[in-house]
Image (tube, rainbow, N blue to C red; front, side, top):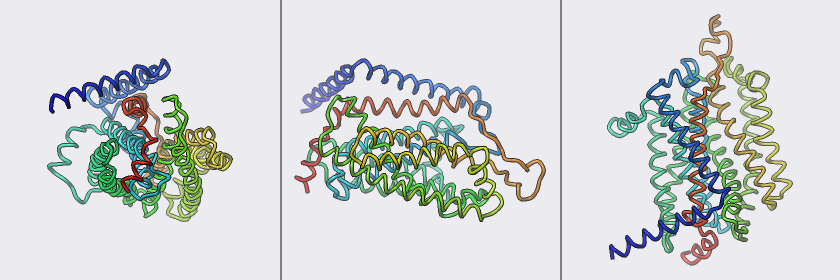
Length: 410
């Protein structure tokens, strides 16, 4: 029996390798490109941490201690939460239309959370010490400790859920483990928002808004990732999208329209309430509305991240997959800069601004370094490489069987 299992495993590996190799020239070029980005990113991070020193290699400094690497981590793990939540609508909460997107969405949730861990691991000065002391010396009063621990548990639950989803007759077990994954993802996501929201000294972040906003933005990011990668996957596999999957994406598209409208309302109220807050909060808002980050806010965050995708999705009526693909691609690009604006703008206002100290009468500045850019591209490379390999290794996730299996087990 053991010899048979070993032989079967070897055959599966060989079959997966043959599918990867037979992916075509363009596919293999992108596999190589994303693999190269991953290696360069890891190399840049190792050089920054152990040779040049992160304080010299990265663009952060005392007044702006966290920047694009933290915002990239937030971007990936928030996307992971959204993917987990959207996938759970079908095989966990029983909405039949969403069942076909379960397997690939859970897989995407796993690789995005790993991409986030990769980036933050190359951002902190001693990632190995963090892992050890997170276990042997937990700080239960720390939001950051809870965030890392909960996302770690979420990764375990998602991995087990994905394994069950791949096996026939295991969907009930997948639903149970998936529910645990949903709970830990939501807890980790809102806790991540709490890391910012509980900083009383940073009035732009402080308050109950961010934990709720993080959960809402996770949903909309998850929708964008699902539309983008599902359409892309069918191009990669050279297959016509089956009707159940197409209906699932139509449902996701309609949900995206609703979430975009809610996010726009949230953004309006965030700006309005900030405009009547303290001097520091008002300065941060002004930096977005009419200051150095005005183009990023109005051009990328508002126009590119909300208005254009909403118009495109309304034009498509959530049926034209090409238009939906373009809308989701724009959202994925712009949401990255939304995360960056949130992290950086919350720090550029000097803490002593309200005291009238001359040395802190101007906004701080932040400039990207080459190392930071390469580490971010490394995270993107990991995500892209894992997606491309996953499509071939798992044979397109065999989405057409999902609904029938779900119905039989139900």
